[in-house]
Image 1 (cartoon, one colour):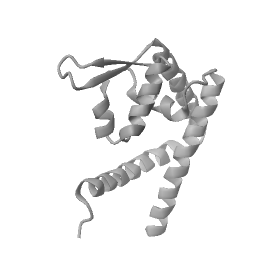
Image 2: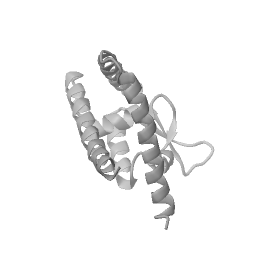
Image 3: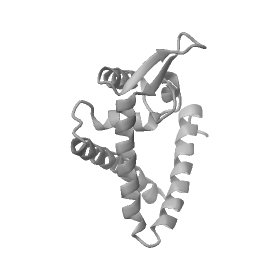
Length: 152
């Protein structure tokens, strides 16, 4: 089991880097040069909802100053709008602008295209479902470790 575990940890890192490469290429195809792949992924993950910055950090998607820098950059480039929450003046609510929604739609189209390509492989859907379950269990294990430390 440990060989498989170490293999999957390395694969997760490589997949993340490759996915960012895919996003970089798509940004170039869309003629977008003012933001990077990580920032585009942040936009995609925010989606069409309004999100509080703290929620992005609390969910573990992004870390501290990194998310703050990327949000500032996306706001300056016109992809994000920020407003103080009417319910809590300390909280900042984020939403995608029209420009941000347009880019998100482009990334969604790319994801749909890639999913269609993957469907051409017989049996892959079942493998992806099993992988999703396993990766969710791995995430839960890592999250528990981060929250509660090593169980002895």
